[in-house]
Image (cartoon, rainbow, N blue to C red):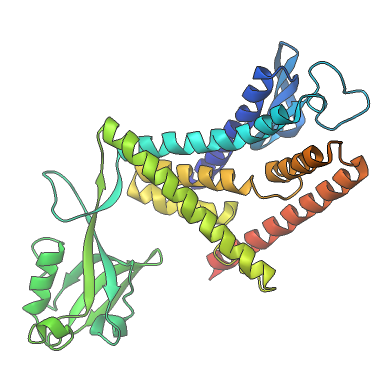
Length: 363
């Protein structure tokens, strides 16, 4: 089911992107010959409206828009031809897909914040449940020696008699640990999606600020689903969307820098296989987290499509800018060659990313 959710998210976001191209083309009088759900071969012609065919295709990973004159064929000039439209109109049509992904990301972030997403809380509200996470681990502490790491979720802690804190909160756990100095405690926690149990012995001197208080050397935070009001969600979504664009752009620039230095590092990049794991984790946190992840993917699609690689919107915009400077169309053979290279680079990237995804799963 998680794989199905991933496919649904990707298809939806790609269709939204193509809907941007479709809408802009219609507004500027460029003829849209086909709006396809999925990729060919064609499975079904759902109908034809205003010379546009709406089709359902066999490969269910996204969709496409086929514009009249998009390929600059000799027989595709004249009224409604994309290639004969003013270059500023062509640019807007190409940018419309990215714009739609950005708008969709904002809407999804607003919905997620309204539904509720995990956030750090100091106190629990009535009937509110929370999870306890490790925020940091002191080097050389009992927790560090036991293998507990930042980001792990604490499931339980108890002594040999089975006694445990009255509530799984930071204050209750600190009090429980301090009352069991020198006594082995069993901590059960979720580490890298696997449930693990370790024995730790609270000791004095672990925390230099409270050297006389037994501790195991971890910082704790409570995380609960927090839902904002509609107005708060819409306001917060503006900042969340902007921060996501900055964060992803910085990460992409870091990859480009390492590639230019001759040592590209794609270990942190995830493809569709990796997304299954990410969505699976998000599902455990609730619907809001899944929607928020979909918004983050939409931001990724917007930025990736702006990369000036032929076959992507960014590459086509780059060629369009060159043509505007030269005041003439680029040589057809050169464009075809660049598109072929671009497609080859994208295929190579997908193979590399998928290999990394599978390697992470096997590890």
